[in-house]
Image 1 (tube, rainbow, N blue to C red):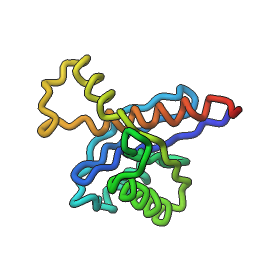
Image 2 (cartoon, helix red, strand yellow):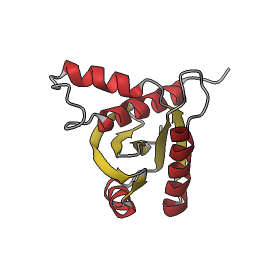
Image 3 (cartoon, helix red, strand yellow):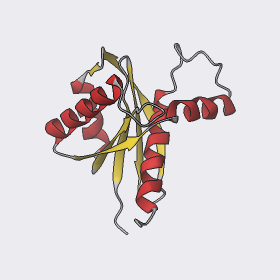
Length: 143
């Protein structure tokens, strides 16, 4: 089995959570939260992270509405992913991230988070949830 490393992004208009993981353990670890200005990241920071972690692929969560339809944020997350690909030439995979923030908040509470998500965001944990979702979808055989 070939080891594949990945960076996952939980895209948001103010914050972008980032996690790193690899295919052998199909896990992820939070790296941090990058600031964004109306959804526009500091591309230099992102490129520095990519140079540091050297992933083989990038994962971007798509925040669909609960009924599966696109939202404005879904469109913007796709645009972010397309720009990631254009700037890095790395493969970008999109993953349905519905409920990833809820799961991240649950996990954060389990480890003692104080519930102040504005001052202590859980976007990097949400990126881990997105990455783990990607690994589990890859491991599931197609029908």
